[in-house]
Amino acid sequence: MTPMEGNAQEVSLKTRQLIPGPEDAGQRLDLFLSRRLPDWSRSQLQKLIRGGCVSIGSSCARKAGETVTAGEMVCVRLKREELHAAPEEIPIEILYEDDDFAVINKAAGMVVHAGAGVRSGTLVNALLFHLESLSAAAGAERPGIVHRLDKMTSGLILVAKNDEAHRQLATAFKARSVRKTYLALVAGRVKHDASVIDAPIGRDPVHRHRMKTCGIRAREALTAYRVLRRFQGFTLLEVSPHTGRTHQVRVHLASIGHPVVGDTLYSIASRVRGAEKLLNRTFLHALALEFPHPRTGQTVSFTAPLPPELQEFLGRLE
Image 1: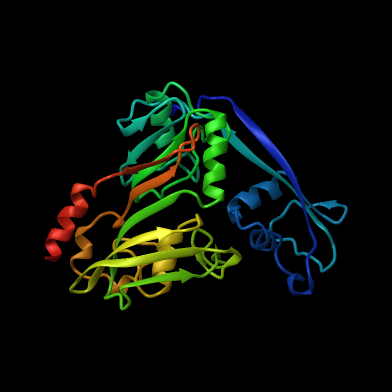
Image 2: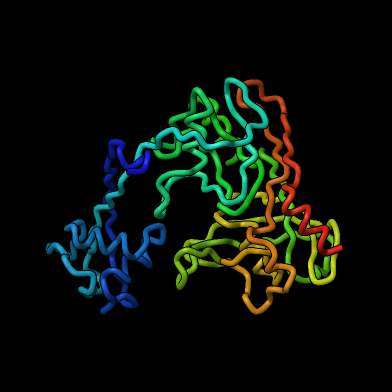
Protein backbone atom coordinates (compact mmCIF):
# COMPACT_ATOMS: atom_id res chain seq x y z
CA MET A 1 0.00 0.00 0.00
CA THR A 2 1.44 3.38 -0.97
CA PRO A 3 1.39 6.28 1.53
CA MET A 4 -1.60 7.88 -0.19
CA GLU A 5 -3.69 4.78 -0.77
CA GLY A 6 -4.37 4.35 2.94
CA ASN A 7 -5.87 7.83 3.40
CA ALA A 8 -9.53 8.77 3.49
CA GLN A 9 -11.14 9.70 0.21
CA GLU A 10 -13.80 12.28 -0.53
CA VAL A 11 -15.98 12.43 -3.65
CA SER A 12 -16.81 15.68 -5.37
CA LEU A 13 -20.02 15.82 -7.42
CA LYS A 14 -20.86 18.26 -10.18
CA THR A 15 -23.64 17.96 -12.72
CA ARG A 16 -23.20 18.99 -16.35
CA GLN A 17 -26.06 19.20 -18.83
CA LEU A 18 -25.02 18.84 -22.47
CA ILE A 19 -27.25 19.17 -25.53
CA PRO A 20 -25.96 17.41 -28.69
CA GLY A 21 -26.15 19.40 -31.91
CA PRO A 22 -26.93 18.04 -35.38
CA GLU A 23 -23.23 17.36 -35.91
CA ASP A 24 -23.22 15.07 -32.84
CA ALA A 25 -26.19 12.91 -33.85
CA GLY A 26 -25.34 9.20 -33.92
CA GLN A 27 -22.06 9.57 -32.03
CA ARG A 28 -21.07 7.08 -29.35
CA LEU A 29 -21.89 8.43 -25.91
CA ASP A 30 -18.32 8.14 -24.59
CA LEU A 31 -16.91 9.89 -27.66
CA PHE A 32 -19.47 12.70 -27.40
CA LEU A 33 -18.64 13.21 -23.73
CA SER A 34 -14.87 13.16 -24.29
CA ARG A 35 -15.21 15.93 -26.87
CA ARG A 36 -17.39 18.06 -24.62
CA LEU A 37 -15.41 17.37 -21.42
CA PRO A 38 -11.73 17.61 -22.47
CA ASP A 39 -10.43 17.54 -18.88
CA TRP A 40 -11.77 13.99 -18.47
CA SER A 41 -10.20 10.97 -20.16
CA ARG A 42 -12.37 8.63 -22.18
CA SER A 43 -11.73 5.78 -19.73
CA GLN A 44 -12.85 7.98 -16.80
CA LEU A 45 -16.06 8.85 -18.65
CA GLN A 46 -16.70 5.20 -19.49
CA LYS A 47 -16.40 4.42 -15.78
CA LEU A 48 -18.99 7.11 -15.01
CA ILE A 49 -21.34 5.63 -17.61
CA ARG A 50 -20.99 2.14 -16.12
CA GLY A 51 -21.60 3.62 -12.67
CA GLY A 52 -24.96 5.07 -13.66
CA CYS A 53 -23.80 8.69 -13.59
CA VAL A 54 -24.93 9.51 -17.14
CA SER A 55 -28.44 9.83 -18.52
CA ILE A 56 -29.77 10.45 -22.01
CA GLY A 57 -33.13 12.20 -21.85
CA SER A 58 -35.03 10.53 -19.01
CA SER A 59 -33.16 7.20 -19.24
CA CYS A 60 -30.01 6.18 -17.41
CA ALA A 61 -27.25 5.19 -19.82
CA ARG A 62 -25.28 2.05 -19.01
CA LYS A 63 -23.20 1.45 -22.14
CA ALA A 64 -20.47 3.64 -23.59
CA GLY A 65 -21.55 2.60 -27.09
CA GLU A 66 -25.04 4.08 -26.81
CA THR A 67 -25.64 6.84 -29.33
CA VAL A 68 -26.76 10.40 -28.75
CA THR A 69 -29.56 12.23 -30.52
CA ALA A 70 -29.54 15.87 -31.56
CA GLY A 71 -31.47 17.99 -29.07
CA GLU A 72 -31.84 15.22 -26.46
CA MET A 73 -30.14 16.31 -23.25
CA VAL A 74 -27.23 14.32 -21.84
CA CYS A 75 -26.81 14.77 -18.08
CA VAL A 76 -23.52 13.81 -16.40
CA ARG A 77 -22.80 13.63 -12.68
CA LEU A 78 -19.06 14.19 -12.55
CA LYS A 79 -17.66 12.21 -9.67
CA ARG A 80 -13.96 12.42 -8.99
CA GLU A 81 -12.00 10.94 -6.09
CA GLU A 82 -9.99 13.38 -4.04
CA LEU A 83 -7.07 11.78 -2.24
CA HIS A 84 -5.45 13.32 0.80
CA ALA A 85 -1.70 13.56 0.23
CA ALA A 86 0.60 12.12 2.89
CA PRO A 87 4.12 13.20 3.93
CA GLU A 88 7.06 11.29 2.42
CA GLU A 89 10.74 11.69 3.27
CA ILE A 90 11.88 12.75 -0.20
CA PRO A 91 14.84 15.15 -0.52
CA ILE A 92 14.07 18.52 -2.12
CA GLU A 93 16.03 21.76 -2.47
CA ILE A 94 14.36 24.63 -0.60
CA LEU A 95 15.95 27.88 -1.79
CA TYR A 96 13.92 30.21 0.43
CA GLU A 97 11.25 29.97 3.12
CA ASP A 98 9.38 32.42 5.35
CA ASP A 99 5.99 32.40 7.09
CA ASP A 100 4.08 32.89 3.84
CA PHE A 101 5.77 30.96 1.06
CA ALA A 102 8.67 28.77 0.02
CA VAL A 103 10.63 28.61 -3.21
CA ILE A 104 11.69 25.16 -4.35
CA ASN A 105 14.25 24.18 -6.99
CA LYS A 106 12.42 21.17 -8.44
CA ALA A 107 14.43 18.42 -10.06
CA ALA A 108 13.48 17.07 -13.48
CA GLY A 109 11.53 13.81 -13.19
CA MET A 110 9.50 14.82 -10.14
CA VAL A 111 5.73 15.18 -10.54
CA VAL A 112 4.27 18.18 -8.68
CA HIS A 113 1.10 16.51 -7.36
CA ALA A 114 -0.84 13.26 -7.64
CA GLY A 115 -2.90 12.47 -10.72
CA ALA A 116 -3.12 10.24 -13.82
CA GLY A 117 -1.78 7.11 -12.11
CA VAL A 118 0.73 8.91 -9.85
CA ARG A 119 -0.17 8.54 -6.18
CA SER A 120 3.12 9.02 -4.34
CA GLY A 121 6.65 10.33 -4.74
CA THR A 122 5.44 13.79 -5.72
CA LEU A 123 6.64 17.24 -4.73
CA VAL A 124 3.52 17.61 -2.57
CA ASN A 125 4.42 14.48 -0.61
CA ALA A 126 7.91 15.92 -0.02
CA LEU A 127 6.55 19.35 0.96
CA LEU A 128 4.28 17.80 3.60
CA PHE A 129 7.34 16.20 5.17
CA HIS A 130 9.69 19.20 5.04
CA LEU A 131 7.37 22.17 5.71
CA GLU A 132 5.36 22.73 8.87
CA SER A 133 2.40 24.33 7.11
CA LEU A 134 0.90 24.55 3.61
CA SER A 135 -2.16 26.35 2.28
CA ALA A 136 -5.36 24.36 1.83
CA ALA A 137 -6.82 26.57 -0.90
CA ALA A 138 -6.00 24.15 -3.72
CA GLY A 139 -7.57 21.13 -2.00
CA ALA A 140 -6.39 18.16 0.03
CA GLU A 141 -4.50 16.63 -2.91
CA ARG A 142 -2.57 19.81 -3.81
CA PRO A 143 -1.70 21.63 -0.57
CA GLY A 144 0.41 24.73 -1.16
CA ILE A 145 0.42 24.44 -4.94
CA VAL A 146 -0.07 27.83 -6.62
CA HIS A 147 1.35 26.91 -10.03
CA ARG A 148 2.98 23.87 -11.61
CA LEU A 149 5.96 22.70 -13.62
CA ASP A 150 5.86 19.75 -15.99
CA LYS A 151 7.43 16.52 -14.74
CA MET A 152 10.57 16.76 -16.87
CA THR A 153 11.01 20.52 -16.37
CA SER A 154 13.40 21.59 -13.61
CA GLY A 155 13.64 24.83 -11.70
CA LEU A 156 11.71 27.26 -9.55
CA ILE A 157 8.27 26.57 -8.18
CA LEU A 158 6.47 28.76 -5.66
CA VAL A 159 4.57 27.22 -2.74
CA ALA A 160 2.07 28.97 -0.43
CA LYS A 161 2.20 28.21 3.30
CA ASN A 162 -1.16 29.71 4.31
CA ASP A 163 -4.46 30.47 2.59
CA GLU A 164 -4.07 34.25 2.60
CA ALA A 165 -0.66 34.00 0.94
CA HIS A 166 -2.12 31.54 -1.55
CA ARG A 167 -4.90 34.00 -2.42
CA GLN A 168 -2.46 36.88 -2.87
CA LEU A 169 -0.08 34.82 -5.02
CA ALA A 170 -2.91 33.42 -7.15
CA THR A 171 -4.15 36.97 -7.71
CA ALA A 172 -0.64 38.03 -8.76
CA PHE A 173 -0.46 35.19 -11.30
CA LYS A 174 -3.90 36.09 -12.66
CA ALA A 175 -2.92 39.77 -12.93
CA ARG A 176 0.32 38.75 -14.68
CA SER A 177 2.37 40.37 -11.94
CA VAL A 178 4.57 37.27 -11.71
CA ARG A 179 7.51 37.30 -14.09
CA LYS A 180 8.68 33.83 -15.10
CA THR A 181 11.87 33.20 -17.07
CA TYR A 182 12.88 29.87 -18.59
CA LEU A 183 15.93 28.59 -20.43
CA ALA A 184 15.10 26.34 -23.36
CA LEU A 185 17.30 24.65 -25.91
CA VAL A 186 15.35 24.05 -29.10
CA ALA A 187 15.95 22.12 -32.29
CA GLY A 188 17.03 24.09 -35.35
CA ARG A 189 18.30 27.60 -35.94
CA VAL A 190 15.79 30.19 -34.73
CA LYS A 191 15.73 32.97 -37.32
CA HIS A 192 14.72 36.02 -35.28
CA ASP A 193 16.85 37.27 -32.38
CA ALA A 194 13.67 38.03 -30.41
CA SER A 195 9.96 37.60 -31.00
CA VAL A 196 6.58 36.98 -29.39
CA ILE A 197 4.34 33.96 -30.04
CA ASP A 198 0.69 34.97 -29.75
CA ALA A 199 -1.47 31.87 -30.30
CA PRO A 200 -4.31 30.50 -28.14
CA ILE A 201 -3.81 27.05 -26.63
CA GLY A 202 -6.43 24.34 -26.05
CA ARG A 203 -6.77 20.57 -25.80
CA ASP A 204 -5.72 18.51 -28.82
CA PRO A 205 -8.96 16.95 -30.15
CA VAL A 206 -7.18 13.77 -31.30
CA HIS A 207 -4.46 13.21 -28.67
CA ARG A 208 -6.18 14.06 -25.40
CA HIS A 209 -2.97 14.18 -23.34
CA ARG A 210 -1.55 16.91 -25.57
CA MET A 211 -2.28 20.58 -26.00
CA LYS A 212 -2.13 22.51 -29.26
CA THR A 213 -2.50 26.00 -30.64
CA CYS A 214 -6.14 26.68 -31.55
CA GLY A 215 -7.21 23.42 -29.85
CA ILE A 216 -10.48 22.69 -28.03
CA ARG A 217 -11.60 25.62 -25.87
CA ALA A 218 -8.41 27.48 -26.71
CA ARG A 219 -7.48 30.32 -24.39
CA GLU A 220 -5.21 33.30 -24.94
CA ALA A 221 -1.52 32.43 -24.69
CA LEU A 222 1.45 34.75 -25.11
CA THR A 223 5.14 33.78 -25.00
CA ALA A 224 8.15 36.06 -25.60
CA TYR A 225 11.62 34.75 -26.36
CA ARG A 226 15.09 35.96 -27.25
CA VAL A 227 18.08 34.09 -28.58
CA LEU A 228 20.99 33.66 -26.17
CA ARG A 229 23.21 31.52 -28.37
CA ARG A 230 23.09 29.56 -31.60
CA PHE A 231 24.78 26.18 -31.99
CA GLN A 232 25.04 23.87 -34.99
CA GLY A 233 21.47 22.60 -35.28
CA PHE A 234 20.26 24.07 -31.96
CA THR A 235 19.36 27.43 -30.39
CA LEU A 236 19.44 28.41 -26.72
CA LEU A 237 16.54 30.70 -25.78
CA GLU A 238 15.46 32.80 -22.84
CA VAL A 239 11.69 32.40 -22.71
CA SER A 240 9.14 34.50 -20.84
CA PRO A 241 5.55 33.19 -20.83
CA HIS A 242 3.08 36.00 -20.08
CA THR A 243 0.21 33.57 -19.54
CA GLY A 244 0.13 30.21 -17.79
CA ARG A 245 -1.47 27.64 -20.08
CA THR A 246 -0.71 23.93 -19.77
CA HIS A 247 2.53 23.03 -21.60
CA GLN A 248 2.58 26.60 -22.95
CA VAL A 249 6.31 27.02 -23.63
CA ARG A 250 6.61 23.56 -25.18
CA VAL A 251 3.50 23.96 -27.35
CA HIS A 252 4.39 27.45 -28.57
CA LEU A 253 7.99 26.60 -29.46
CA ALA A 254 6.92 23.43 -31.26
CA SER A 255 4.28 25.43 -33.16
CA ILE A 256 6.98 27.59 -34.78
CA GLY A 257 8.97 24.55 -35.82
CA HIS A 258 11.49 24.58 -32.96
CA PRO A 259 10.48 21.98 -30.34
CA VAL A 260 12.32 21.84 -27.03
CA VAL A 261 15.19 19.36 -27.10
CA GLY A 262 14.27 16.12 -25.34
CA ASP A 263 10.52 16.78 -25.50
CA THR A 264 9.12 13.42 -26.57
CA LEU A 265 5.53 14.67 -26.54
CA TYR A 266 5.84 17.61 -28.93
CA SER A 267 9.00 16.81 -30.91
CA ILE A 268 8.92 15.10 -34.30
CA ALA A 269 10.88 11.87 -33.87
CA SER A 270 12.55 12.13 -37.26
CA ARG A 271 14.11 15.46 -36.24
CA VAL A 272 15.89 14.13 -33.20
CA ARG A 273 19.63 14.34 -33.77
CA GLY A 274 22.37 12.18 -32.34
CA ALA A 275 23.25 14.68 -29.60
CA GLU A 276 19.64 14.83 -28.42
CA LYS A 277 19.63 11.10 -27.76
CA LEU A 278 22.16 11.69 -24.99
CA LEU A 279 19.65 13.74 -22.97
CA ASN A 280 17.08 11.78 -20.96
CA ARG A 281 14.98 14.80 -20.01
CA THR A 282 13.48 17.95 -21.50
CA PHE A 283 15.90 20.86 -21.91
CA LEU A 284 13.56 23.31 -20.19
CA HIS A 285 14.50 24.99 -16.92
CA ALA A 286 12.54 27.53 -14.84
CA LEU A 287 15.43 29.91 -14.28
CA ALA A 288 13.90 32.91 -12.48
CA LEU A 289 10.80 34.12 -10.65
CA GLU A 290 9.91 37.69 -9.74
CA PHE A 291 6.69 38.59 -7.91
CA PRO A 292 5.22 40.82 -5.18
CA HIS A 293 5.64 39.40 -1.68
CA PRO A 294 2.17 38.26 -0.54
CA ARG A 295 2.48 40.08 2.80
CA THR A 296 4.55 43.21 2.10
CA GLY A 297 3.90 43.77 -1.60
CA GLN A 298 7.61 44.34 -2.15
CA THR A 299 9.07 42.76 -5.29
CA VAL A 300 11.15 39.68 -4.58
CA SER A 301 13.16 37.63 -7.07
CA PHE A 302 14.82 34.23 -7.13
CA THR A 303 17.02 32.29 -9.54
CA ALA A 304 18.00 28.65 -9.91
CA PRO A 305 21.20 27.76 -11.78
CA LEU A 306 21.09 25.47 -14.78
CA PRO A 307 21.35 21.84 -13.56
CA PRO A 308 24.67 20.04 -14.19
CA GLU A 309 23.21 17.65 -16.77
CA LEU A 310 22.01 20.57 -18.89
CA GLN A 311 25.32 22.40 -18.52
CA GLU A 312 27.13 19.25 -19.63
CA PHE A 313 24.82 18.88 -22.62
CA LEU A 314 25.58 22.42 -23.75
CA GLY A 315 29.27 21.61 -23.39
CA ARG A 316 28.87 18.77 -25.90
CA LEU A 317 27.52 21.25 -28.45
CA GLU A 318 30.60 23.49 -28.26
